[in-house]
Image 1 (cartoon, rainbow, N blue to C red):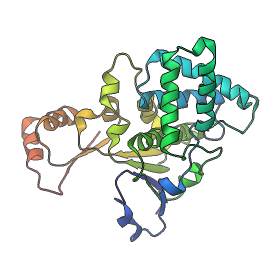
Image 2 (spheres, rainbow, N blue to C red):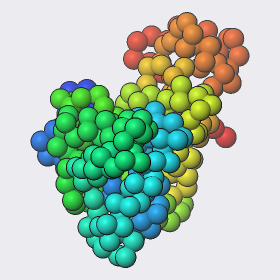
Image 3 (cartoon, helix red, strand yellow):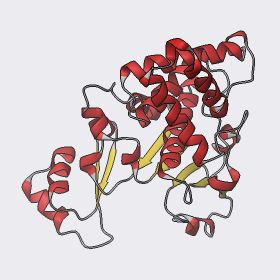
Length: 290
């Protein structure tokens, strides 16, 4: 297998059938075998970029408004300074450290009635209560995972934990690729099912929210060697940015509102659309750009 891949599997053992033809695949059960420090970036990343990436992913995922985001930026910046991150320390805080820091801040008079800080604390506390995956300093070796065909199984975890892993992991991978700056060659493919979890059109349409930062990273992924294969049953719920930045689109038999959205996305006429609505089970239509 020349090009390694990472399958982020949400449903139970959906991709285990790949092991027989490809015995070199490693399977990681996230609930038992995966650790991920959300605040630790790929090696060589400027701490300011690390802070920005975390804030972008966390606030996008948790539907955090701009004011709440600015509070969190300042407090994590203080936490980074406490850990000596800006001075070159390799010890990054983790989500447990962040929870304790936010809790301490809530005791201070100026933050005592700060609803924005309280909401951030509650979100971090919720994640730490649901799982121990994020309570680590180093975490699993993601760079090594990208060198080997891997299935990361997320079944058995709560939805909030699953969504957190997916968006932060994809952000980590894309930032890693941008840092390496290896252009013109496909180096790795990430495969994500139920991709509306992170490419959510409702956030894209919410004028009170920033444009999802993950969409910007995706637009550069292909240029720097990271291929993305994303799938979902509801195209109406996917961001326009994602659709615009995918060169190859595959659709199965579809009807109703989804069919009209496919017509616009694939730029099809009525005759072509009729073909899609009549496709037999297991048959798809492929459209490539250019």
